[in-house]
Length: 380
Image (cartoon, rainbow, N blue to C red; front, top):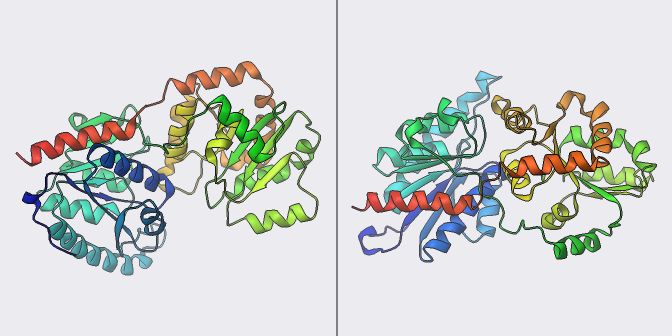
């Protein structure tokens, strides 16, 4: 890596670290885009985990990324952590080298184990750090890094139970910039998916990889959906399950009013036409639902650290801003709940109004405001 004399630069040099899932990567890229909007000449370097999706998504977004061989700890089988410790030590050495050579003004951590070595190395070198915590229940990495952070940007109230209160700034989670609903986009969405504007539309998404429980739930409801002439479903099953679900389609088992897809390239169109959304309870998705004022049924994944998706969902349910169906009950109950709700206009409007009250607007720009303050103080 080429060494740079920071004193000759008038624009900030920023490292953004973290990733592992889209829930970490989308906010990271949104923050970087907002940095570029504020300072067009800013030097931005991403640091992620080798083999994870950020190594592909970040370059596609136009940014340089360095991968560390870091891996997450296996909490169920401790013996499997022997190589993990070795990878962590190697990642720490590489992170120190990156910080020394890049000379950042600030290091931004968006969560996930990839951010641990880099932000620890930055703090040890006297570089101020900013954490962005997406969930209502803080992740292990961010909790460990909080003590030395300059600012911690959060998306939920009550985060002082995890972080020092004087460091917390409520900014919300940055979202994809194209998610704006207009009447024109709604009409384009109906045409794009080949839908009937006179029918109610349910959108079910399980993430880019898919969610087995959601897929099993809709398969169990095919008979009910087949006789529901008043509605239609956009079903993103995920790439892991697409061939299996496509076979059901070839066998004629998927009702005509259910539109199967492995991945939705135009999520803006899908949101625009949806009267009701069924989703996992990832923090990034919830932030989008709030901004778009979408009535939503959340089915939290049980396979995440600290069961944080359930806590994300419960934060909305407490404010009557979403409906929750536990994963273990979804196959039997999810679509009974969905069919009743999508036909209840008053309840849909109530949920929409309540979730809109939780929206945090311009989150990426507000995080960049905090970065700007840090950079200014760091250069004094």
